Length: 190
Image (tube, rainbow, N blue to C red; front, side, top):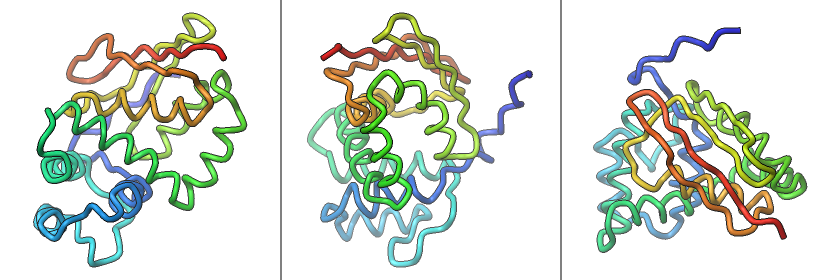
């Protein structure tokens, strides 16, 4: 089976549970009036019900606004790392996230890491992920995108691995080009 033709960037969508996870739960109590107004002007109005999906270009822009507003005193990479951690925590409070996180905790790191491609596909309409085991606690994950947010994906995946029971998870970007990113995922045995 050959891979699907990639969706053009402007047709890529992120689903509502991702947006809800961060904006409703992950940033609870930290959405200032200024941030709320900037997001509204960008295209996400928090005074109205969230839409079923948002374009990836819009979502990436909104994430940059959120980092500027919530983490102005740290370098962007640290701001994106903190945002990713809040995002994973917040996603666990969504209806879908509560169910997924319960299963993640039961699987343990070895079985959980094998589910990461499937989990990522459920967050948007474009993600394809290929996972390769290199050692029992070291995998490589190739994603069909390269997000312009330094540290974000690494912190997101590390937080997910931690939820799956991994000890001292570490995610490192090995390679990136315009259409894909390769990450090393590793953790320690207990």
